[in-house]
Length: 478
Image (tube, rainbow, N blue to C red; front, side, top):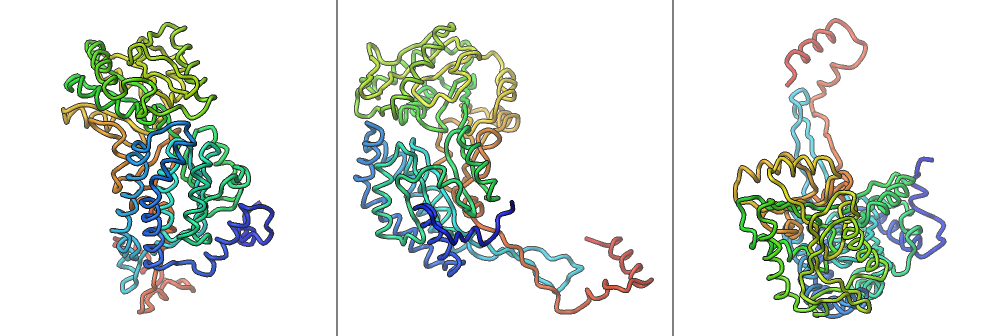
């Protein structure tokens, strides 16, 4: 059944999610186009909150993980989120301006333009791995576009969700932004939002997309996938290892755009292994080091151990990168491993790893890598290490992924003038910066008819003059 405006308004309220939705829907109807001053006020309040509450935020995320250092949270989440807000504030006035468009000469003296307007009430579903950043990033875009926004964090992120619900409510009205602790996914995703942003697994993403379809709600899906990393023969292997292992071991590999598996020239595989075994102990002297993050829960911890055991049972060779390091069942810490001699029937090459395990494949020619990637789902990210511009161009134009970082890993997500999003199995839609503003706006086309009423010449009754006019227009149409 088609969704009606009355049902989107939701006259009857049966739970907390519906109460907040109705509150925000009513606020949108009262003020469907918040001013630049309002939007800036909301964003600045959010900026101040993140700075003032950074220690409490880090503590809450640490409690949700079991262990994650405050430094990692501040670097990978708070800093990036705040920088995104400030970049948006610098450009918002220009983004909000009507966009003038060409008008056909046939309609001379008419005027065409596009008005970016708020969609209404936006829902955001953020995952547990970067719960602050992956909530605040799309929230920044939603507020910049003038929307009201409801946010649901993962069940594993409820310490943070309760903190943000309390702190945000004190600085931004609930009718504008609301974090919803404890709200079931079914109650949230079935609301008739005007747009829904979901970040998480592909399986859950399919469920969310089906629920949104019932309300004809447009969606932005960020779904991850197995992001490949390629070292070209011209690039220094030790330097590549240093940069790749930073990306791989940040948050203990629990990153949707982490390097998932590595292609290295066959002649340089052992050099990469030697470099990795030298680098990792300097950064994480022991698996229990405070800089090294816990796996989020027992289920994920058991899955990763089973993935490593499956690879070894099928002929792979695990290479631990910390001598003598043990698995810490209590803190759910897994020592970093390279995994050599992998094959495609292993789970480690079939599923997104989401942990500190890095399988390595070797190649003789880049064509082998291109062919391999072309046969697999499109990943959320791709990483290429090469100083040869011809190689870079070749890989860019013969493969496809959500985003790319050349000669490092993951840093494309920190460039706020670049859109962030997947393609195919890794997602649909994008946010960040101007593209995020557009994603969560309705670009409303407006045409002002010409002042001179020459369009009357095309009105019935049709006659020879009409036919001659049409012949002329078709012949000379721009």
